[in-house]
Length: 350
Ligand SMILES: [Zn+2]
Ligand SMILES: [Zn+2]
Image (cartoon, rainbow, N blue to C red; front, top):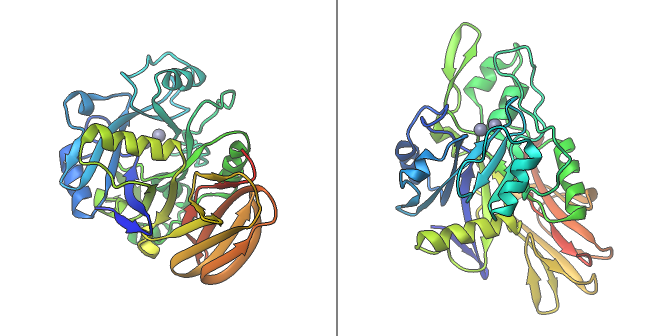
């Protein structure tokens, strides 16, 4: 379980999935068995408006896989989908988005905005459910990349057969728009960026056929969210959950599309003298700071500062002497397909 990379421990898992308790097509136990089989280190369940799996005692460590149960809250108009983990209960349905964001914060629960910008056609059978209430900034993070949502947005009459046959290959990456939004929020505070699978395994109409595009197993070999921990994940459920939630709220995270290679040993560090920091951490000044990046294989590697591209090169490693303070992050692309996206390291800023 997990992988030791220098003096840190990397874990990869799947966030955002639905069971038969809402609109998914398998039970939690069935889905957890699939997750175990494909080697997920953690799974975060999010049925719509319900915590029945948690109430049924189904959180736990299944083999080597940590299973936690949160839920996806939506407002009465079915917008503003919010993934909440660790809340004492499901919040009332008549709250506004701002109110349930605040309620989760007050209860010390973890809250992540699901598919913040969703743009598919409103006319069709699968309308978009965007986030609309930007009057609050009290959430913990954004789902930068949503597997089902991107797939549905890209679906056009002329490409649907190809997309149905190779759903993982057709994923492109988080949009520039969502990355800009996320970079901007991080200028004001700490907001984690995660990948969500949004697994339901429901059938989609492709022309005259009804096809199950993303069986859970395919989902779990696609978009992953990776944690970088300073200690191995505990075998005790309560402690492991705390480690998971702290790593997420602390932005010790990167995301990947596994289709282009296992990213468990992706490395992104900033060194200053004896000190080395990872995603989510900070260094107080730019003095003698050196960034180091190592990819599992060659790719188009980008280093960004405050959302601006500093370097772009075809490589599997990079060293860079920092001159300006800011929020640094890394992207790796395989051709036109996004592969790995880090969270930020903060250098010379709070
Ligand atoms: Zn949703
Ligand atoms: Zn969902």
